[in-house]
Structures are given as C-alpha cells and as structure tokens.
Image 1 (tube, rainbow over the protein chains, first blue to last red):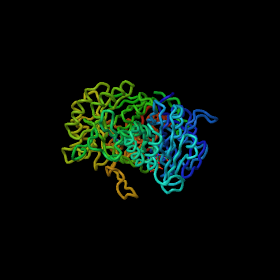
Image 2: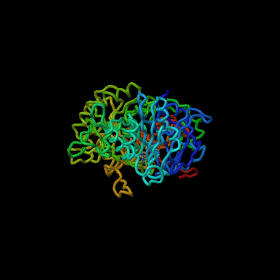
Image 3: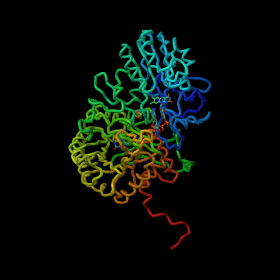
Image 4: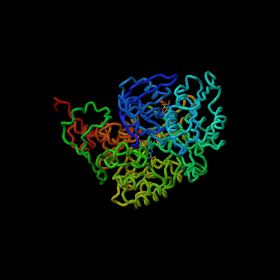
Length: 288
Length: 339
Ligand SMILES: Cc1cc2nc3c(=O)[nH]c(=O)nc-3n(C[C@H](O)[C@H](O)[C@H](O)COP(=O)(O)OP(=O)(O)OC[C@H]3O[C@@H](n4cnc5c(N)ncnc54)[C@H](O)[C@@H]3O)c2cc1C
Ligand SMILES: Cc1cc2nc3c(=O)[nH]c(=O)nc-3n(C[C@H](O)[C@H](O)[C@H](O)COP(=O)(O)O)c2cc1C
Ligand code: FES
C-alpha cells in the first residue's frame, strides 16, 4: 500500500443531503489506496482567493480506489460556519483542494474478537469502513449510533448491513432508545463480551466511553475532534494532553499522532488545559 | 533552479500569463553570504522542522527551511484554544511549544541536513543567558545555514517586557546570541512590528552584530467569542498573521530598507503568491518567508517561487536581486512630459 498524504485538486462528483448532513463525493485519485479507517482529509475552502485560509478536517466516510471516474473519497458533514457552508454550496465538477489521507487510523485487533463501534452524530462516518475491515478479520461487529435527534443520525440503514447488531439512541427519543449512546453501552459491552470499543464523536462522549471501557476492562480507540489549522502537523494548534508509553504526559498533535488515540492514554478531563506535570509545563508562576 | 512546469495551484497570476517569452530567470540568491536556490523559505513556527512538509514539496529545492523557534528546555506551550481564524488570517497563541534544544539538535537538525535542506535555526530565549546558551549550542552544530533570533519573547529579568520592543534589550539579546555563533554563519534578527520606531530597533540590532533582519513577526490581536462573550484564545491575545498583515509587513520592509539600504532583509507577512513575494522584493527584501499560507497550501514555498519566476520574467528581470528595492527609485515620468 502506498503511504503518505497527497495534495490534489479534487472534483465534486456528488453532493447529497442526508438528514441534517451533506454527503460529498470527490474524485480524488490515489487517496483511497492509502486510506485506512479513521483517517481524515483536510480541505481548502473558499476557492483561490479565499479569505478563510485554514484547512477543514473531515473523517473519510468511504474511499474507492477505482471506478468510472477514477478514485473517489467521500465525507459526511454538518454545516457549522463559513467553511462548511461553502462546501455545501459546491456543484458537480467544482474543484476542491484536498489533502489526504491524514492521521493515525484505528488500530485493528490481531485476534477475531467481538468489537463495539460507537458513533455520535456524523461520528459514525468512519465506522463503516472500520466495520468492513473488522469483519474481514473475523471479528463480530456491534454498532451504537447516537444523536440528539433522528435527523442527526447518519447511516442507520447501512449499519444493519455492517454490523451483527445495531442500537440507535436519540436524546429526544424521536427514534430508537431514548437517551445517549453511553447509556446503552455497559449492557452491550457485557452482552457481547467485547474486547475493543471504537468511538468517534464529541469529546464528552469519547471521555465517557473511555471511562466505561476502563471499568469493563475493554480496550478503547477514540477518534478525537480538536480544532485544526493545517491538519498536517506544522502549526501546533490541535494538541491535547496524552500519556505516552513512558508514562510522561505530553501535549501531542491530534492531526499526526491522532486523531485516533487509545482512550486510556488521553487525559480527557484536562483537555483544554496544560495539566501539572506535563512535559515542559510552566513552573509555578507561569511561562516566561 | 529552473522550473518548467506550472504548479496546480497558480493563484492570482493572471497578468503574468504569456511571460514564458521573457528572459530566463535564475532564482538563486545570496542572502548575507549564503547561497539559496530560491528566495522563498518557510517561516518559523509554520513548518515545524520541515519533515511534515516533505510529502508536499522538496525541502532541498526551496530557499531554506526556517525551523520553529526552539527554547533551551522542552515547552508544553499554552492551553487550547490556541488559534482563531480571522479575515484573511489568523490569531495564534501557541506559546513556543517545542522539544528543547537537545532534542532539536539530536533529531530535527540532522534530518534537515541529511535531506539537503538549508536549515535556518530559529532560537528564542526568556533571558540573556538563555540566548547566549542557545547561540553557543546552535553555533557549534554543523550544518546550520543561518540562525534567526526571535526576540518577540518576554524577558523574565525585565518585568516580562518583550525584548523586541526596546532597542537596548533587543540589542542585548542579539549580541548575547551572536557571541557563540561563528562569524561565517549569518544571524538574522527577527523584529516585531509592534513598536513605535522600527528603524531605531533595526539599527541597534545591526550594531549588536546581526547580519540581516527578518521582518516581521506577528502583530498582537484579540478576538472575542460571541456566545461565551469572552476572549476566544486561552492565552487571551494572539499574534495576527496571514495576508491580512501583508501591507503592514511591506511597510516595515520599505521603512527599514529606506533607512539602511545595505542591510539584507527577509520579508515575511502574508505572502501567498509569487506576486506577493515580488512586492516584498520591490520594497527592499532580498528573500521572503511563507508562514500562514503554508497551512492553506503546504506546497506554497515551492509554488510561490515558481510564480515569482514568472512575475520576474514578465517584467524583463533576470534575477530576484534585480528587483530588490526597485520601488524606492523615483517614479518614471509620465510619457510626453518635459521640463
Ligand atoms: C479529525 C477531524 C474529523 C472531523 N470530521 C468531521 C466530519 O466527518 N463531519 C463534520 O461535519 N465535521 C467534522 N469535523 C469538524 C469539522 O472540521 C468542522 O466542523 C469544520 O472545520 C468547521 O469549519 P467551518 O468553517 O464551518 O467553521 P468555523 O468555526 O468558521 O471554522 C473556523 C476554524 O476552526 C476550525 N474548526 C472549527 N470547528 C472545528 C471542529 N469541530 N473540529 C476541528 N476544527 C474546527 C476550522 O477548521 C477552521 O480552521 C472533523 C474535525 C476533525 C479535527
Ligand atoms: C502558528 C504560528 C506559529 C508561529 N511561531 C513562530 C515562532 O515560533 N517563531 C517566530 O519567530 N515566529 C513565529 N510565527 C510568526 C511567523 O514566522 C511569521 O513571522 C508571521 O506569521 C507572519 O508571516 P505570515 O503572515 O506569512 O504567517 C508563528 C506564526 C504562526 C501563524
Ligand atoms: S492541525 Fe496543525 S499541527 Fe495539527
């Protein structure tokens, strides 16, 4: 498999609305061959004269190596601010500068063990490719898709094809089990005898899942979403406190050392701060 | 370096089309005694130590890689959020996160040297002693093309006032660093635009032993979140960068070049295209750096050089050196006037 990210001019093949989300398919030859589940793309937004210079990161939902149009890469996104609004305004044949695949993907188990995959909102996007890989290895796959409401769920139909069992939760109870994805997780972990839980979604959800996994003695692999400016490791904006193999806490870049981290390694409660004892943390009295 | 193919992302070069018929432009320059294949380098803090850009450009082919300012000890940097996007730019408050000089010299510098890049090592201190020690450590390391002294740091020994804002303190920091650096390794003093009289600061750091100047570092800004009704950045204020500050940077280069035309200047601030780089040369810069725009286009230092070559050729100029300071010459008389 080829490695390393590519930078290229992708061309819009399709842009469809799915519930509250947009599903964008880009022709981006070469990206799929390098993609593993959990990787992301960083898109330039606003065109050649853009005043919004920073790259926008999106999990890769699907990547196909070949087809009538050459290789494609697909993302699912919510309109949030000017960059995502610009993306939602694209039409077929429009060009978008793509960098990808980026980041460290989900680690796969060596043994055919039961796995639980939890997606919050559009966080389910990278889990379908992961489910395929896990099943290829003989793992049984169980999915939980949670969101605030039905329109913010992504991929419930596809989940039924990807997984042996699917639980859907909505906070407003519009569909599935009322409540949060984490509410149903303890029972599911016990029932499936899961060895690994994979999660992608908001930080609060990931933090709760990492803690539940710890309690159940299950490995967790969490894909985080930190604010990013470059996506390629040169700006140092996307850091969070992570404990290394040597026990030392460092502020690590989630774009190159993540976005997927072992849940037990991230200091979830301290995200957004420099925890005391972090390598190079300011001494009492603060940084010079 | 002769570049034949146009990059995919040619931006804003419409009036340079057809330039292929112009003279052959050799992009190589000499900056304070160091030969660079192009006048376009990365900017400190916007390229890490070069390695991450390798998938997007050839680090050996660009002018130079200016590394993230390194401190003596490892630094965690500031809490997040560290960045906010602003119109045509951004504010950052990274807090010089880095591995410290030992790790830098053990891994980052050898990587750059072994890949054929010209390494311009940026150093930053919190005290004169730290600048002196950093100068000594970097100065005794093989393979350093030049040292850039980032003096936009608070001085712990002087109530946390930023070195770059006072001619006397700025000079002391530069001279402390200079002492340990061999004569044949150029020292670029990087100045802050947040001062009343930039020329007097430029003058005093040159007196203190700098070989050239890098103009400019970021300018201080602030953004407030409409929802929380509090500053966005964990560090409250941040450095503004990107095309939004280009006119400010061009003005700084212009003023300093006018006052001291023989001092080599590296222009930095908002360079996005070859035409932007050309503007800096016209104002008096010998070379330029690309910072924030690398976040938008990691191939930019390579692309900008290609576009600059086209821009120079379109105006009949054969080398970047021929453009340096041209804008300071008297305007040509409008045709048909007589005295
Ligand atoms: C690894 C990763 C994967 C992601 N995957 C998806 C996905 O599959 N679908 C989806 O809808 N969104 C995803 N996001 C979030 C997405 O990047 C942001 O919603 C988007 O950048 C917002 O841009 P904007 O211009 O609309 O908003 P603005 O708020 O105007 O963005 C301003 C700046 O802040 C950054 N930013 C703002 N919000 C976020 C955020 N939540 N995460 C990271 N950077 C942010 C932007 O990149 C930009 O630099 C992902 C983020 C990361 C880091
Ligand atoms: C995220 C970020 C980090 C930076 N870190 C440093 C640094 O460590 N040392 C330094 O001298 N300048 C640093 N700078 C300033 C840049 O090198 C440059 O002077 C400034 O951003 C203006 O150029 P630009 O508009 O091309 O970015 C940083 C800028 C940014 C945006
Ligand atoms: S987003 Fe720039 S270093 Fe991670």
